[in-house]
Figure 1 (cartoon, one colour):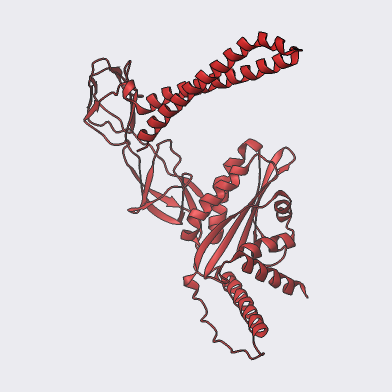
Figure 2: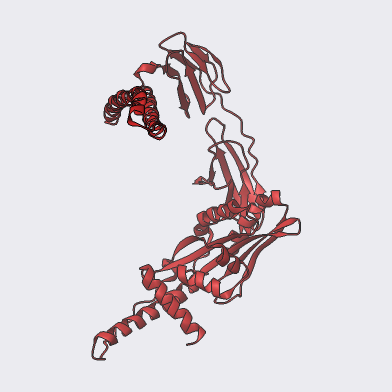
Length: 423
């Protein structure tokens, strides 16, 4: 059997054993990270998360559809061969020919991204371009495109390579190749994002960097909102009206020119927006209130210009501490402390501690009784000598019995508390 026949046979066996449908109208991408340094595992995860999120939006329709068509045609042929084999093995040799199914439309292909994980020997071989291992990965996972990201030492630097495998064998396209200091590898991520997305788009892609410390930033491009992943937004070349906003900050709107194959930074000169005053009151004037970035003091407390989002902390002796978070402006915050003795978790914790203490004493008395009995039997030569040890042994056993009863009572009390608190 030739090499192609062996590969087809392996694919049939894999598909039969995995129980997946033999063909589906999907364009399947796989991404394998091989970290030879042992320190950059998060690098590949970030690439996979970002590219898989945006690839469906930038991928040129029909550009790689032929790969899915080839895989589907091969899987259909394998399914037909399997059906023919089953028919020959269970009939008198007469086979009814079935009509061929219609060819799939290129526009109906859906994109599937698979993050590949392999054991160390196989991943090293894949990184080295071993055709047998690469074919195994592609066939076993039914991949049309396999991307292999390799991070390896290069003198005192780290080398990052990303290769694309689409055909059978070691032939590949080198999509990215760069050197960096070990502590600067993460700075290559924007270049990797741009190279991969620009490669798979037919029109060219640029990246807009929204580097900002504003939490929860949202972006709208020409009035359409886009989710941000890793602060970079891929856009085709052109001029856009971009609005960036964040909770508690003024919106920033500007016109931005994006060039294909380049990274531009959108200036975010955001300023905090002062909200209306907020009054914080409590059931007691002894409640201590603190707001990071805001005022602190006893209740009642007034914050003349609140800045959202903010967190409020309140504490009072003999009561549970409170933590309250606010993402929208408020005018009044009312604090109601709960006494510690009303806290179910506090009562359960005390009962649990008492149970553990009693159980520890029971085990200690049990061990003492066993030790006294063992010593008395090893030291005493005659029966009358055992009488000397009897009071000590009886005291140990008595203490064990009393402690066991106490443990049983505390166990029942703990059961009652946990039973009612879980309802």
